[in-house]
Length: 406
Image (tube, rainbow, N blue to C red; front, side, top):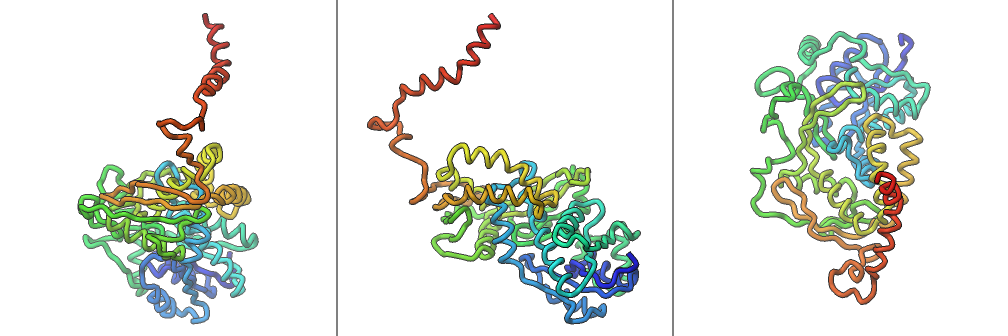
């Protein structure tokens, strides 16, 4: 790709992408545009601007965008409408951020006349797939530079040596020396990979965790939380209406305080290997619990079961980078249709790493009928004799098969 004229780099200002910025300039001799996304990672982003300026990036070619509301409103909330979990545990905190970053990379490429994008995802990871599938879906003619598939800086120690040689500041060195953890953070989660976590038999250091206290250190008194839903999305906490990003920020604070949302996972990566990572997703853990609780009284049984059947497929589409694919959009349309009646409130108890559903109700859409469900006299609301015929009809095929075995 020697004909690259201008490239938009997904730039965090951290070790990997700072090295990539310098490497792109040296290797491709092209104009570089940097894009730094504020997805709620909780870090000061202005240093990224200063680093980019230091390496000669024109001020008008430095993009630092606050995408927090769009991220939660258009990506996180739609995902949780499906109760999405990958491989039974992972709440897809990294995966769900990638389609938004890809979208903005392409937007900026069009705005600036760039013909190429670049990212810091390694050739072993899933993010290279997510970024590039999204980019090709949105701009089929775009070129992609993936440095980790081209250069020979194939360890974090080599990256740090390159950084030192070229005067690139390295932040967040591990307190015991060597390379830092490979981390990804946004409003939904923070992840940790690398160092001794590469050995699945090694326990994570308590000092590694950043958002959550250990359940043992959480308050001894439970905290109650009222969560209000409209059309499947949380709109208020404890009676106070909030924007999507504010909702997730508040839930992260509450969940972290009570030791909620830690996960140590060996996952199956799209590229074929198993990978161990540790995750903190306090707010997402609360959302998932509350959402399933409100759906339990507002969704028809078969609709709820259909959603549960489709969820693993939907989760795999997000994990594997197919957010912008037609099949994900079709599934989203179906999911969103089911959420029209998911309105009401849930009361939760947060305690020592647990999210406990205490109560739930919906004034307008509850399918729970106490007159039918009661163990007391139901006044004829439900005729128990009907169950006999139902059972016999459903047993008929098994009775016929059973006779043949005599």
